[in-house]
Amino acid sequence: MKTKILKIESPNDLEKIKIAAKALRDGKLVVFPTETVYGLGGDGLNPKTCKNIYLAKGRPSDNPLILHIARNDQLEALVREIPEVAKKCMEKFWPGPLTMIFNRSDLVPDEATGGLDTVAIRMPSHKIANAILNEADIPVAAPSANTSGRPSPTNANHVIDDLFSKVDYIVDSGFTDVGIESTVLDVTVDPPMILRPGGITLEMLEDAVGTVLTDNTAIDANDKRVPKSPGQKYKHYAPKAEAYCFAGNLKNIVNTINKKIKDQPDKKIAVLATEETQKDYLGAYKVINLGSRENMPQIAHNLFYALRECDELNVDLIYAEGFEFRGIGTGIMNRLLKACGGKITLGL
Ligand code: TXA
Ligand code: MG
Image (tube, rainbow, N blue to C red; front, side, top):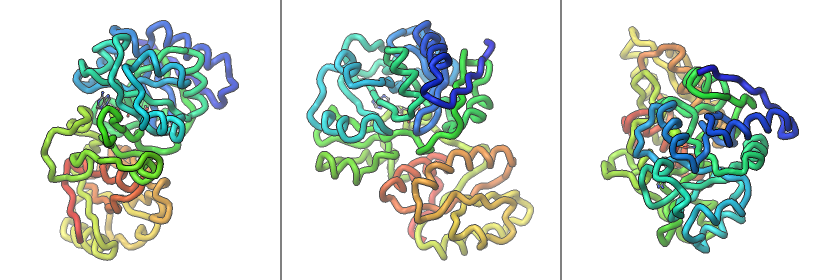
């Protein structure tokens, strides 16, 4: 397939927005940016297009897709009911990095939901995404635009690496903002439950709607139960090298990682460090500064980029500093847990 790149820098570039929207309506595959990560979009009500999305990504077909919409009035036809909690969340957090799970209507095909009776829906706040979705005026199914198992793409070059020649269009609008995928909140249960932590944090949700639970498998490396969100059971965000995460007291983390570097002089080791510690690692092949611990959103923004950089550098081992399970730190740790295949040392 010949992939065309559409560079769109503004939601006012109507000519190109219309090309992307028409392609979506015609059942084509269009990668577009969102405020979280790039998405691999296609007509979410077209079973054949949904199948093509799975094929392009190499994704297991029981891992359901998120339908992306531009306006509240598109929601009603897709769901059986809109619970009060969802209404409050829509008002507060849409458009934005919050996906909600609803009971689905008959309009939504099995191919979009992996056969589940529920459907995931989100309204992105990215201006260009919103312009394309509004112009297309169909619910657009869009998983993250990476090959299944790889870190999600936070710029168009990542997408080109994974999906060039597998999709019809790639909209290139530079870097995404949040850097990790949306929070997934199940609003079919009471109290609602976070299935995947992200940019809209537990604290923000509790502020808006009261009690909110979190699926323990999303935050506990030792919880081997099947996650409630099918996608969470797969190996994810996996860099090529073995990755290990160390959490607890920062001084102890630095000392532990330094000792491991010293003990393995023949290994190419990358350290995922922070502004505060980057100068403290001695002898590492590469020290990647994720950003300041005072600015956790910046660390989320840089995380997947850093994991892909480790692949490019062909390192043997990755040692990552851990973070507190608080605010967006919970989302960051969820991704690190998966990148490390659960190899996390807590409580140093
Ligand atoms: O930020 C995001 O959400 C990005 C951008 C492109 O919007 N999309 C994204 O999609 O991360 P994807 O397909 O990579 O992840 C969707 C997650 C998966 O973990 C999937 O299992 C879960 O949402 N999910 C989808 N439908 C579900 C459902 N009906 N019940 C439970 N989990 C569901
Ligand atoms: Mg994904």
